[in-house]
Image (cartoon, rainbow, N blue to C red):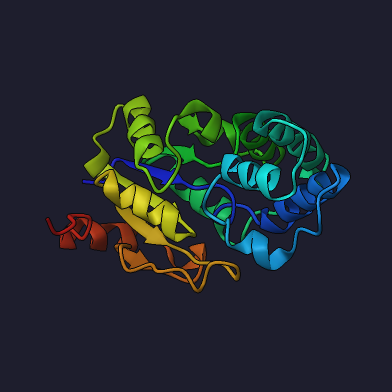
Amino acid sequence: MIKAIIFDLDGTLVNTEPLHFRAWRDTIINNGGKEFTFDLFITYVGTSNEKIAGDAVRSHNIAKTIEELIKEKQQRYMQMIPEIQLFEGAKEIISDFHSQYKLAVASSSHTPEIYAILKRHNIFDKMSAIYGADMITHKKPNPEIYLKTAAALQVDPTDCLAFEDSNPGITAARAAGMYGIAIPNELTRHHDFSPASLILQSFNEVDQQTIEHLEATDLHKLPA
């Protein structure tokens, strides 16, 4: 029985990927790097800041640590937060479900970014738990962030439903034993979503019947 709903943030609740790209491009070029293209950035969607920064330091011979480069990128990104918009239907689903289920965010972004975005859109107080990439050791597709979020909610992972937009995200949720609904965006439509319990086009397709269908069909049980 589903007792909690956990949302990925970037590309799922909010349309942030173009801004992450701009922040990374500016940071890499400002540190003497070669051009960082959008096509290259797309290959990192669903991974982590650490992965992008590590590759950038090595491939562009940037004379900074991974941590220093991430910090600089985050400072640039935080300046862009007023531009960030929720995806259609995101605020409505949170409003509809927050009194019925425990809600949480499990994101590959770092917690200061998550907090700022949720507060700007007045949905921070609707979340019973928030986990960011700086709170875990192993990033998606490893299930660590989902297992820790479920523990913080005091809900068994098999009673959780995760919303994701990428293959690493949906793989992480399913590996944790959760139901997983994929809502691809324009940058992730080419991803493999075969592990998902269900694939939808937007939050506008989600209602109580969707939840009940997942519970009835028990699709979150992955084959051994």
